[in-house]
Length: 262
Ligand code: 2AM
Ligand code: CA
Image (cartoon, rainbow, N blue to C red; front, side, top):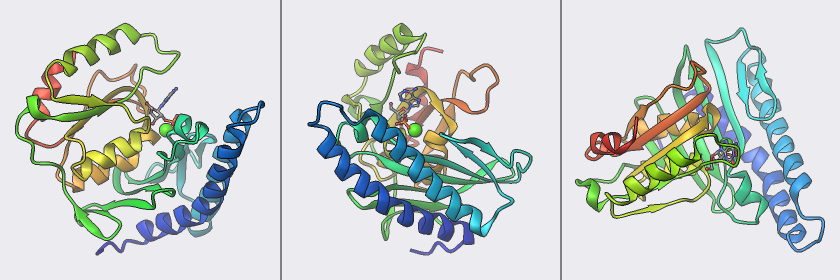
């Protein structure tokens, strides 16, 4: 793998450190699964623990960098030139249910642009990594988006709506409409891994509304470096941290965009 920016090395190191406790916590969740109390609170603390380790590690190298995270919000808010964008456990619901499909996702943003990122599933040991101009990798192998030409043959992935969504009907009708025009649709429960799976050609495309920036920050650069196209649609109330996204190979991108009911 020919990625060597200091930032990518820092992210990988932080991920490896945090994943050790995350793997232990996941083992514990599997035990709690069968207990009457259930793993609910435990998962919240696993999320916080993971985030704390990631922040500590990244801060050691750059105490001045801004950080956007799911649990702690903004750190060093005034530094918008250099920012880490962290999701300690993307796919929380999977984690909570003992399903080994979740990931640590960390992107690095320079002057508003994500320039490198890592998505790491510590259970399957799959690490997706990319750096601007250097390609995208799964572990040590270069990855590329699929070459599927027609949307009718495409296997897509999506997520949502979340429980509190106010646009459930719209999301469901969009789902029906898109399903009727593609080969099939999957719902795996981790936006970060959905993006990574498009980047390595397992899925041909992905769309989802009502995401948070940290769900997809690392995915943006991994997908772009794998030759994928990304589009943000229906900007959410001018809130830059809320995202509706389409991500796919280049061939089906415009057709997929047309199927979204804007
Ligand atoms: P999370 O696991 O970190 O919560 C599931 O469709 C995907 O959407 C996951 O990546 C999940 O991230 C993300 N998501 C963002 N906000 C969500 C919410 N309020 N409820 C459920 N999933 C959410
Ligand atoms: Ca998330």
